[in-house]
Length: 299
Ligand SMILES: NC(=O)c1ccc[n+]([C@@H]2O[C@H](COP(=O)([O-])OP(=O)(O)OC[C@H]3O[C@@H](n4cnc5c(N)ncnc54)[C@H](OP(=O)(O)O)[C@@H]3O)[C@@H](O)[C@H]2O)c1
Image (cartoon, rainbow, N blue to C red; front, side, top):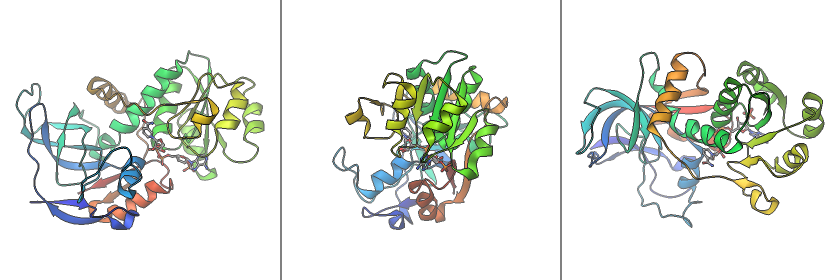
């Protein structure tokens, strides 16, 4: 048996507690890692609350955690290029535990610590997918809602690195962080359209990672729904805006992103590193979007 974060019923973050569950075994095409860090996501909260039950069933007791970094301790059949003892990061489905099974992974380069590595798979994939869809050219202007967050922070930096001008919204406390990502920061809330217009007469594309009713202002700023993309706001359907939730995980893209971090081209927006035993407090920060970046658990 091993220690894991468990929930036995659907509910708020308080249903998360430490428990004992059977150790998983690596199947064909998989590796098992001794977990060093687990990235938390809003999706973990949606599954735990029961909000996803209409789309897929979660068998209880369940273990949350979609992304981990750790040391390989078991290699499944038909797996090449990785051996026991290698440090890897990647996608899982029950990561908040001492051991986790990875279905897709990339090596952790020297110089990348475990919390940073564990924070990359989900947010990195979403950020890169969003930028691919928006197809930005150097010199264009992108408005990112939630630029201080996990996905928004990476999307902002990747766009800036590609020569795009980024205007990023964040709370007053996170303006400096967004500026450090190379973007022009502004606050969200009333008067947003005027503030953005004063910074940029033309907005070529909008990425919404905040999901807080910013789409009407975004359409106004963009002058239509073309190249307005949300990763999170279901209001998109009624407004003719694309809501994209089709994850396209790629080991090579994850490895490339990890390399960019080590070379200092991108910084990982890790806001909090919290012990596994405090999973409820950690996930509450994520659910309430109060973390100001990624929240990572460490066993
Ligand atoms: N579609 C997909 O495939 C996909 C993939 C990954 C994530 N997501 C979704 O994308 C969203 C962002 O994920 P994340 O991991 O980046 O979360 P996060 O780190 O919590 O970031 C959310 C950001 O939203 C900002 N925010 C909070 N209230 C706001 C408001 N009223 N107006 C504007 N911004 C506000 C926060 O900025 P301040 O702290 O500065 O207030 C925060 O940085 C989540 O809903 C998640 O479920 C979707």
